[in-house]
Amino acid sequence: MLDVKNLAVAFGDIEPLSSVSFSLKRGEILGIVGESGSGKSLTALSIIGLLHLQGGRITRGQITFEGQELTQLAEKDYRKLRGGRIGLITQNPMTSLDPLQKIGSQLDSVIKLHLGFSQAQARERTVELLDSLRIPDAALICERYPHQMSGGMKQRIVIAMALAADPDLLIADEPTTALDVTVQAQIIMLLKKLVKERDLALILITHDMSVVAQTCDKVVVMYAGRAIEQGSVQYIFHGAQHPYTQALIKCIPHGLSKGQKLTGIRGTVPTVKNYPKGCAFHPRCDRAIAICSQQQPALIAASDAVVACHLVGESA
Ligand SMILES: Nc1ncnc2c1ncn2[C@@H]1O[C@H](COP(=O)(O)OP(=O)(O)O)[C@@H](O)[C@H]1O
Ligand SMILES: [Mg+2]
Image (cartoon, rainbow, N blue to C red; front, side, top):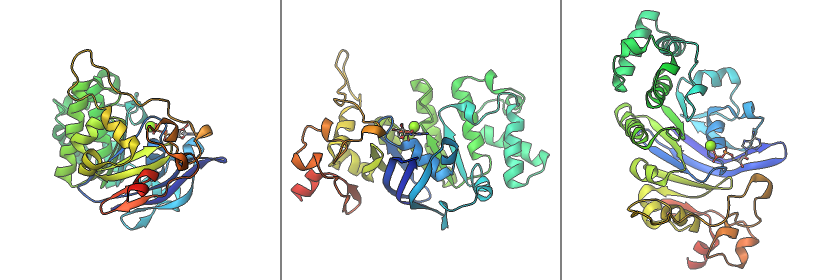
């Protein structure tokens, strides 16, 4: 359904994203993980065609969605895809909800615009949709404004907006970051259920490895604007070879007893202005060797995984 190949993004003459490739089928959930600033949102914005709003542009690569090349798509065609066949969910409900419009009429509008329904048909679909997302008293909720809802309910409405036009692909960029842990878990379970029920494809962007473990089929690990390792969820959690991926897994607070410290990764994430030479992770890597600070590691493909690390080349 979606094929991203060698994607690179630039702002002026800085290039915060390069060599990002992955693909996704219907019914699959792909996780994109990495610390803040690693290029996750730029990847999402590239697919949904909103990079220009931030002043960025795609400089290399292809994005193919259901056989259609998106990097060359005219804005008017993108407008049909966005909120139509591709739905976007972000962490801030206020980027997709209008504070001045009742929830019902916001949903009705999306449905009328993309599916050409009458007002009566649209409202019927709105109510069905809210019911299916376990939002109680749907007809009543339609008459409310976003600020009258709790954080978790608001995020369900955002999901409803993203689903309203019956998309094929959903992109959720840190959809639960602003929510408390219990609500987070409910929203993630809901997304997972929707993918199976509606046979959608989902890109789930998160910096939370435990969410990835519970939800995703495939995982792309990003560091300093590159996809440095990817593979099935089994591979990532049981066979990851990149020291950065291994460190992320060690950071999962699973089974921690009281008082025990979380193992963070030493050092800080590099910013675009000072991406280190060679492998961008080498200053933080306990296993770095001489070549790591000099040469960018090539992507090495092995059966169902891809990894960019000089150590992997060594042992192979
Ligand atoms: N509008 C912009 N102008 C310049 N650099 C940007 C812009 N947006 C993002 N970047 C840079 O691109 C990198 C990746 O950003 P982003 O994709 O938002 O990271 P993530 O979502 O993984 O936290 C960051 O280093 C950030 O500074
Ligand atoms: Mg982001």
